[in-house]
Length: 243
Image 1 (tube, rainbow, N blue to C red):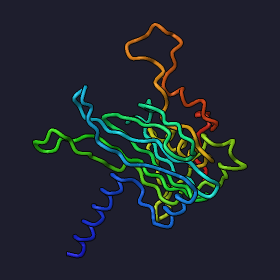
Image 2: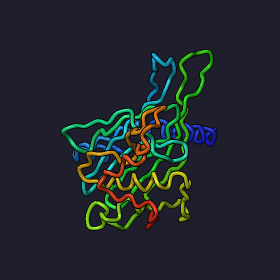
Image 3: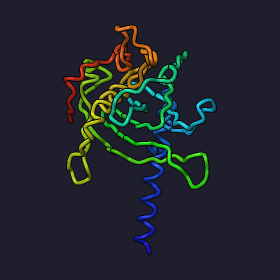
């Protein structure tokens, strides 16, 4: 009976983690609030009245100070950049940067405390629920790494390496956790985001610069190129993991 209860509790904890994101202790939440870092990992179901369909809505948000950083954003199922619905500019820093809507979202969330990192990658989609017209949110964990290490000060003297390295994660037994290849780049970019002091820009989402069904402009850019304005390095070819 006790074993069944433990299994049930673990399943519930996993479902909460997949749906709501990293569960941070009160002392960590207080530290983020004191530092002025606002990270909103939640995913919500929204109804498009004109299109008569449901979509998922997510928010790219977060930033960093030297001691701590937190960030959450979204990519598609292949790990590619998604175009934002709208960018959000504000007076403050380390807050909301953009909003995205899509039928399926892959959330990438990271917390950094000094040189220690937690990374959670989750998949979110709409699922039919009985006879109800409103679908429910179905979430699952694709990767969960705790207390990963990266012995570099990406927020300081090693800032030139931002966008090219990401932390290494291990199991409790000391075996290396392998991040799915599709999300290597997203993990690298979000590792850069949690080291971006006073962040004011997007690290994963980008603008849609090519209008739908219009091809007369051969110079139109792809949405992924919209991120090149970020001051962090975008040299994907040099991406590597350092412990």
